[in-house]
Image 1 (cartoon, rainbow over the protein chains, first blue to last red):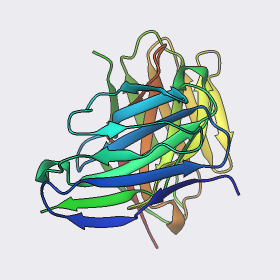
Image 2: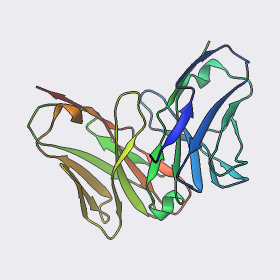
Image 3: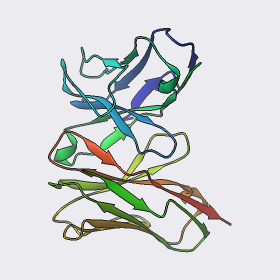
Length: 115
Length: 111
């Protein structure tokens, strides 16, 4: 089954404790991205990757890091989480970039709480 | 500034009724427009994708229209069901590598 898998689904952590949210897709997609969703706001892009070893900042990259060492995986790293990073996070993948009109598939989401 | 605005913010209808959701965008240049359905706490799921040359596209009971001249789109839901209760998000892409999301319309369908 074609899917984007995020782990964990739920995470509560303390300020400053490094964490990684994993994202894996089994569709051989080139384009992957991370979004955060907050109440009253649309999804906002954190980082995206056009292919292996190619990453770029989205609209809200501060406080986050990513890597793309393999095509299928695109982990999101919070080196020193802060309470304002409490949010619902989504990973997405597509065969090509959004401008190409290819369908984007989203993961189930990771609800992160930083206390 | 590239923006996507949706209306209404929320909508309540009775099961079996039809409804129409609106999307206005200022993204330029324009590449494609998508409608997604998002159940509470879940990831968005694609309903339709339209390029500037398409003015209507259907997916079952969902029909999306696009007017690229006025930069407006609508999503029409026919014979609503309880399972249609969700947020519906309009998403536009220009010539960049990004998707621009609206804030969504929250639809509640009651029996």
